[in-house]
Image (tube, each protein chain N blue to C red):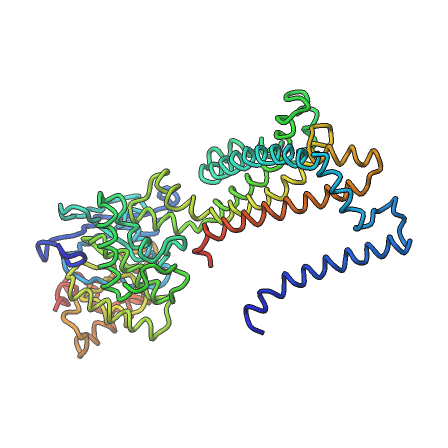
Length: 254
Length: 269
């Protein structure tokens, strides 16, 4: 098989899988195997989506959620990566924070909801806080692990050629060597942050999550599925954009 | 000034002097190296020969300043020239930085020497020319063969115009044919450059092929157990054969029938 054909085969198979899923789903509802109250037929999603778009709610929900998503993602990623890199590079800081990390690490982002409400209120800042926490840990461990996995011989090479000090090591070895691991962490965070968006909004901050809660309380399951698919689309877009950037940055990995 | 062409100003002058070097990792309870005295003169190609794990690479790192000695001192007599480094090292597996292009790897040691980008570029390209890889300058290290990577390692060390070039079993991980090719090239470069080289190897044949002086490191703690001037290349004939036989015994840690100080001096051809 030619390379170009092999290159096209996978996405084609992926698309075929989705088409089959929707076909079976539509058939199952239409022929009465599943009651439409339990699961809306795919054919009902289009009209539901159009109504939502016409009312302006769809765009508004996306806009609100994107705001939470991006601010939480950036704050959590920057903080997590920074602290992770420093802990990996500075044994003293690593030791100092190791106890704190053990205490805080197992606490899921959602457990902070009461404090998010207390400290920030039911608003953008509160939702951002929840998202940032869950993204923080992913990036912290990715950056920390990436620094710890650096071949120690490279530090020796750098020192032998005049890059022996802490900052010189950081610039010539730590940052470039850790970049693949850091970028993998960022990518995981980009996905995890969408999950946290829904969780953070479920308690009432306007956005996709809140809209899904409203819809489900009205048993508007078609609308719930519309927003599920909306999130999938948004995730696909952000992940694809990120992978384009990643490929440019890590050309040396091949 | 043409890059990579500068040898030390005065041939025969001491480039590096080791006085009573000792190294211990447990505060003096046991020593890896002890009482190592050594002088290397400008223009010499010295092989540091000894069994694997004896501490040859460690001694090289002490000389390079990467490992501080527990006892004694290393004195490196560098030229006062600008924009060069007193010592440079070629590592065992090249150890290139995979995120830098071949040229940027060679430039590593030039950064921080006060050269502008164009000057760094020119010097790196001259060094790559010397090892025959100028056409690979913008490739990534992963796109090179093991032998090519090691040539880049040699270029990276030569481009800083070191007074002392330290080589840590640089061809040990390569296949026999590639190794033989690189050994020939190294001799060729040395003949043109007239620099000073300290080359670590556990291979007697490699030492005899390359070096004009062979130092045997042996024992626990390791010390200098023999210092042979093997004279002009090619190293053949009865005198060299006899020396090689003695080196073999010394490396194996066997008693040497001629092991007295007077004999070492007499062995200088």
